[in-house]
Structure formats: structure tokens, C-alpha cells
Image 1 (tube, rainbow, N blue to C red):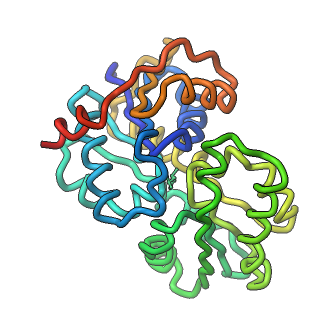
Image 2 (image 1 turned 60 degrees about the vertical axis):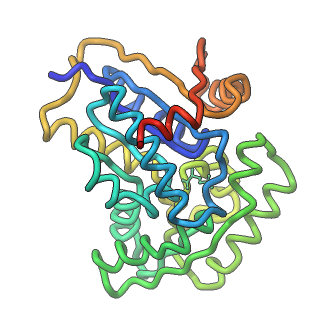
Length: 272
Ligand code: DGL
């Protein structure tokens, strides 16, 4: 048994979709969620900068005493996961492998679409992982720069609908039967994707697949917490705590009594 919490981080509120699935799967665990709101979005940034941010946050979480870190951000996972795993002692789970694996299992016509941020698409990591599992699968990728800023701003309605339809069009033309929603913010607008793609397309979200991977990892390493207890979550942000709390409560449908602010300086110090 291991009573230490699990650390989860994202560029902003998107990783809450992973936290939610973890709370459903592992209600007995404690979590520390860190959203880097002050530097969100990561998607338009160069890989080296995202790698630096991810390293700072993961170091901060490791030093705070977590037993496992979930990089609940596709952009951070695609830019930094191998380097994080090399440089830190704590196990780190990313969001790409679980999702790619689920998509390869689900596709019937071996044509998979990917919708993600610019950084994730540019990294080419999804194609690499999908091809390592099935070299005969065709992957059609579309970068969606408008979505994270709209989701973080809580915008729903025509603007969001139009943007999703625009990004989905090349995937529909390519006849994909499975779509990887390769950004942890996207389950927050799950219903929009479901309407745009309809029933015939399998949508793969990172949150469910990643929570499964986290639960399996804890079990296999023998570091689960006592199953009889009720877990608690601490929320940290580099951004504005009030905004984070509002978005978080709305999405999680969970009262959040306190959001702690961490400065970017503190994160930089942790990695120094
Ligand atoms: N949730 C992050 C991801 O999964 C969003 C990246 C961003 O901030 O652009 O990629």
C-alpha cells in the first residue's frame, strides 16, 4: 500500500478530463492537479519550450512527493515524455500510447484520423506509435489551433461548431472510421465531436484510456492506496485561481473549495 498522491499536469484545464476518469476508476487515491494556466496554450509553442515547461512541472510534482505522474497533455507528452522518463525517478504515464493503442484496436478499415494541437501534429509521434502497432494503418492528421483557446475561454456555440466542422472535413473526406481526439481538452466538448462525426465513427479520447493505464500501473507496481478510503484532490494553477475554479467546477461537476496558486518561478526553481 502506498498513501502518496498521484500528480497530474496539463497546460491548463484539459487534464481535468483525465483527472475525472481517474476519479471514477480510482476513487480511493489522492491526486494533485497542476494546470499551467499562465503559459497556456502549449500547442503553438516550439517543442523545446514545451519540453522545458513539462520538465519544470514534473520536477515540481516529484519534489512534492507524488508516487506517479500523469502527463495529461498530448502536446507535453509528444514533446517531452522520453526525456521526463530519463531524468526523473518517479514513473510517468503519458497520454499518447494508450490512445494510439485503442485506435489501432478499434479501426476496421485501417484509416485513423487525428485531431490535435499544432505541437502534437508536428511531432509525428502518433503516426510513429500507430505504425509500431500496425504498419499498414493510414493516419490523417489535422492541427486544430482554434480549439484550446475557445475551450479555455468557455466558448460554446456557433464559433466552436464551425471550427470543429472545418477540422473534421479532411478526415471525413479521407474516409477514416476512427478518430483520435489527441488533446486532453477535447472531451470537454465531447458532444460537439459526437454530433459532427455521427455514430459511424469511433471516437477515441485520451482520458478513459489513460485512466485505465494509470490504474494498471499502480496495481502492477503494488503502489495502490487503501481501497476502503475516500481520496482527495488538491488543485494548483499558475494562472488565475478563480477562473480555474469556475471552469473546473463546471466541467467536473464537483465543488472545488480551494485552488492554490503556484508561480512559474517556483516551477523554474524545481527544475534548476
Ligand atoms: N491539453 C493540451 C493537450 O492535450 C492542450 C495543449 C495546449 O495548451 O495547446 O495537448
